[in-house]
Length: 175
Image 1 (tube, rainbow, N blue to C red):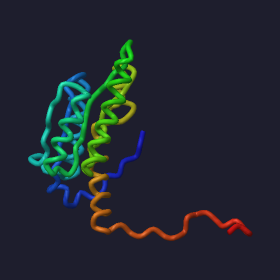
Image 2 (image 1 turned 90 degrees about the horizontal axis):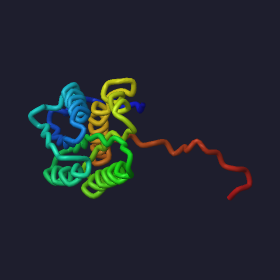
Image 3 (image 1 turned 180 degrees about the vertical axis):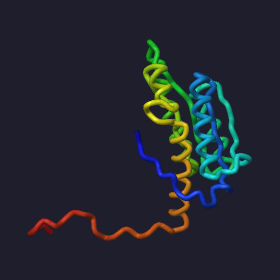
Image 4 (image 1 turned 30 degrees about the horizontal axis):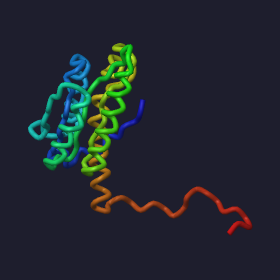
């Protein structure tokens, strides 16, 4: 399980967030959505500025995420669940969804968070929506907020300058 910074909630009420949710494996994706919305609420994001869009499956997440990113939202959170079956379909869907969602963020500069579970079975999915592996919906929302804050630091130049020390020492006699 990763560690996610809760960050500073100051200013979060002004953020515009889009959440795109796959309807496939709806029991799981509804729980992911609930976790993401709860995390945004705890962080002070105005629920009126959070728009939720449903799509049929994981492959449709990216195209709607792209449309959302083009509307000047601060971040897009993509939520879905791809559960391995007996065919290679899992690999095609999981890989394509991951790359497409990543490409939305890279091409638009808007954080596009990959909150899609890619698991072997339903129990692993349940473990990731409040079970033994935390709550990936909450983590996706926290990731969005932390990325927004980091981008703001980059754009405003408010990040403290790193020291020149790298931690490496010069090798005597090397030039």
